Image 1 (cartoon, helix red, strand yellow):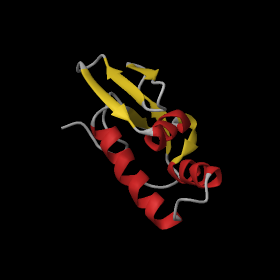
Image 2 (cartoon, rainbow, N blue to C red):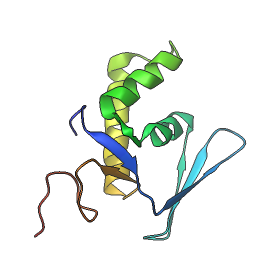
Image 3 (cartoon, helix red, strand yellow):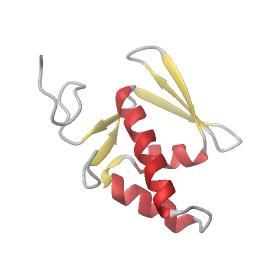
Length: 105
């Protein structure tokens, strides 16, 4: 996914913040539930249509000096790909649930 492509939360996905900082997502479209750790929950929150992948990484890096930029970038990229594949997130330009750039078959 290009680092300048913005991400949106799927409006069919409901989120619940748990007391331990984890977040549970429930996708009405496929009846799947997903649990996000606090870092993944930040990715979810920043996926508001105004933040691109690169912005999200920079925001999370600015919150803590614990993360190494290259490691965090790779881990968030993998996470975002998984969230896109599972329908939790939608990339800017996606149409009818298809990832950006993928045409109808």
